[in-house]
Length: 355
Ligand code: MRU
Image (cartoon, rainbow, N blue to C red; front, side, top):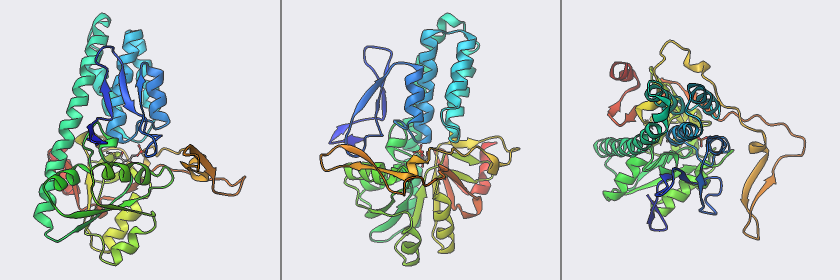
């Protein structure tokens, strides 16, 4: 996707060394900076502090963490240790586990001398596949839009950031919108700010702006009101994990939007790769680990000060305690369709397609 007219991905391989480069998303939208990652520790840190974030991108970056570990020490113990440290870096997005499982499955049977080379090559495959997957999601999503809506200036609402910044390229929930824009479909996007990390205000507004897609930022509490007023034709979001029953774990606040959409008869779409699907149908999905992040994210806000420097300011009385769950679960009854790289499914169809 484009940044100031130039093609970019969120993560790419160095042309000369076995290192990777990322866009530091903690600085967006005010500063566009990229940084190299050279080691497992740097990868874990980048995931934890959300320099990279979004379920698919976390998975791809974690795979490189394994490759870096293999460069240093390619023993079985090192592979197990790196996997368990990466697994703990962010607990909710299932793509992380998916990528680690895939790396382990491929690397364990290989002799340790060959592990780094194999790991690096598998990482490239996973990275390339992510782009193709998101392109397919975009095309299926475009068909869904074209087959169901025929209106001047479609009004679309999205929560969090499930655009190209949350993946290697194209995005999940925003991929159909990029395809629709390129096809000349007339639409406008309501962007939820997505407190407390403000992925909507910081990231979605920025990437839509870079592509000149008409959008308006709204406070998280405004969506229900807009739906009641007939100002939303459909909602589209990404996912961090989807149960075999079609329940969707996504950024905190998604559930409230889904309930409001249901109440107002507005389609609620979820776009996600099949690596998002938690195949363990035996577990109680409502018991999955929901990441609880630092209370400072709620008590403080980040922005530019008058000297154009990124600053955090305190917004609650000193000493106030805060609780900061990062994700919630939307039961499948509120989900109209799930768009994957394979097609468009009702929540009830997932089991037969993916088990
Ligand atoms: O905490 P984040 O920024 O990693 O959360 C991201 C989301 O919740 C996204 O909506 C989800 O990962 C889907 S991204 C394609």
